[in-house]
Amino acid sequence: MVEFGSVQCRVTVVIVGLSKTHNKDPLIFEANDNGETNSRAVKNINPYLVGYGNVFVSTSTNPIADVPLMINGSKPVDGSNLSLSVSEKRSLLAAAPAAKNFIRPFFGSDEFIKGKSRFCLWVNDEERSFAETLPEIAERFQKVSKMREKSEKPLTRAGAKTPHRFQQVRQTGEEDVIIVPSVSSESREYLETLCCLLYRLGTCRIVAASS
Image (tube, rainbow, N blue to C red; front, side):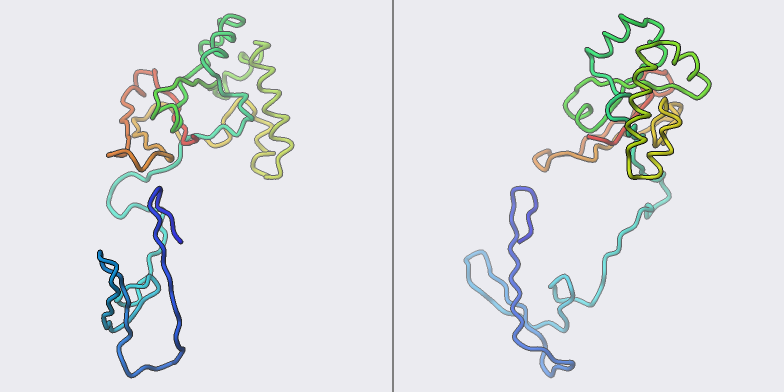
């Protein structure tokens, strides 16, 4: 049984014989809207159980037209220590007003679709020394480093040396982007997207694909 959201599709296959050759066209049995079963002869039944030639749909990460490649957003892999809720942002700014230069809006599927607010710490390499003079930010960097050191993935462990950075950085904050949530709902009549033209104004700096 295959499920497509709330719709369940049941496929039953009965093998009545095996042979290298056959003298008759194979039959496909189907039920119509009235529940009656009909059969029809086809030249071939392919792996997708339809009467057509043996074609295979292969995966591809490249677009079929001359358009930009769609990629995931930047991912922190930080144990939530580089992410900030609205209240955490307020608390951080109250304790360290200078941290405002490192706080950026952070969009995931949930924030974008439901209009929620989330923020993150975005510190460039040349800003790290100053950011670490702020105890509240330095503490978060230490927690990121410890979290990454315990990972079984070599890439994550290597990222323990740069706890101020997202582990996977795919946007610089200077480009225009289109946000496409990786998690949505089948009940929606359209796929939510947003052309984030505010990038160049400096108000939208990070887009993440995490939900």
